[in-house]
Amino acid sequence: MPAYIYFMASKNNFTLYVGLATNLEERIWQHKNHIDTNSFATKYNCTKLVYFEEHSCIAEAIQREKQLKNWKREWKNTLVEKDNPNWIDLSENWQYH
Image (cartoon, rainbow, N blue to C red; front, side):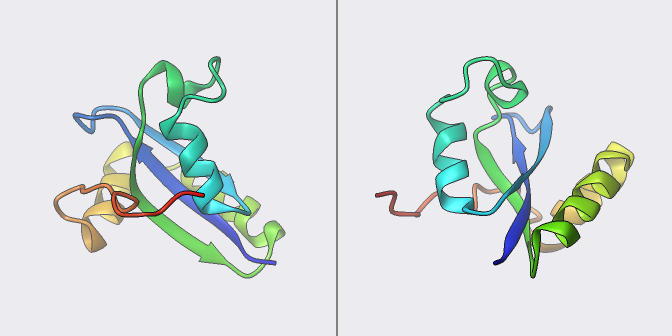
């Protein structure tokens, strides 16, 4: 079963959240709708999906998430800007069920 590492950004891209999910669409919907009112992403209004990676298994994704959480912000920015230089919301046109 695939798993995903993703970055959610605040509106002004000032705050960045690194997360992990097995169902990326559902998890992003949860962030956008502030389902967990006590979460970091909700507190800082991180509702833009600006980066994600698919991994073949959860163990691989967990390892990558831990690695990315220890990265400097500058490195994370570079990773986002490599494929998404304008920091657009990659989930903007997703159809949620």
